[in-house]
Amino acid sequence: MAVKVIKRNMQAQGVKLAHGERHMIVSAAHKYLDEHPELIEEAAETGSEVPQLRTPYERETDERREMGDEQSDITHSKPNTAATLKSQQG
Image (cartoon, rainbow, N blue to C red; front, side, top):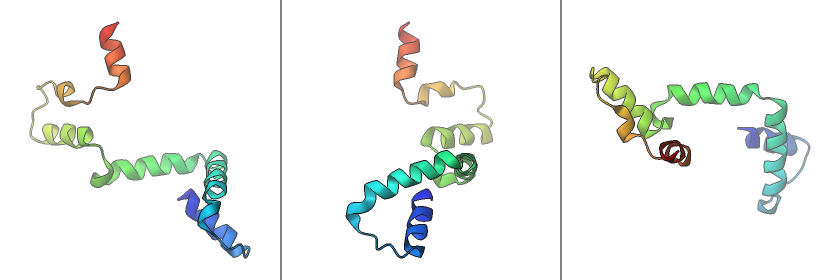
């Protein structure tokens, strides 16, 4: 979204966009997001409401809750992340 905002602003200023300028556009988008942190929160809320954007783990957890299978240990299906593995080792 931020990249689109930056591109629109540049085009409105008459700047012709080329593929080689992607780095500059992405850098400007990161700066834009730093200045507008509420957009990150808004995107996270939107993402949690759209089933296609949820992780398989989140979808499986919701499906198990809907089926009333709250007693089962859902953590077995959670992917092993570096943090999870580290906490299990020590």
